[in-house]
Length: 236
Image 1 (cartoon, rainbow, N blue to C red):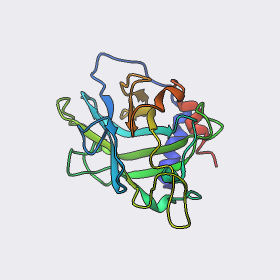
Image 2: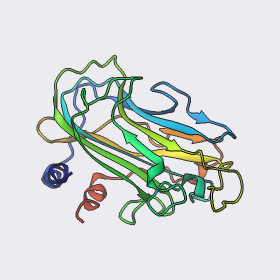
Image 3: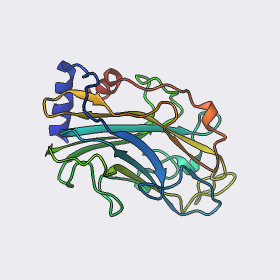
């Protein structure tokens, strides 16, 4: 963890690189798999996985960062989706993986160093602080061979919703499972071998998925974060 924090700190001296003629990948979010649906509507508690993938990339890279936020139509997070350390589901109910059998990892191997965070969106960011933020930073050995025709995994987020129920929570359950939830990509960037941070292609604000329908998405602000606000979150 310390090595990645040091690497992220170095980014404070590197400006964001502009778009070049090279092919930069496009990030997508889907349920169930690397090319799954964008909505998951269900009344059945269980395990549900959200996949963040990239396709169309052909450039060498050494790291990437992805984050998304989610909440209901009131820009709040019901107990069924409280996977922060103090939440009803607790942080034990969520996993963030950089490998999957369903598509190859963008890092080409699983030997990188990662930072993972699940928390309410911090005041330093531009999203409502009542939304949940899930972020991943992954640093690894330089990757030179990248096939733009291959869809690569950036992250698989697995939610344990086996204790989720419709309606109110109880001592043994987490309520609000019936509510529509909107997930929006907040930031997705990668580092070239020289340490330049470059944005992936992601059509803001349309890079999103929904749970129990799209009813909550109009409530989430259609704006993206900046790397400057992200860097400040690691100075702690």
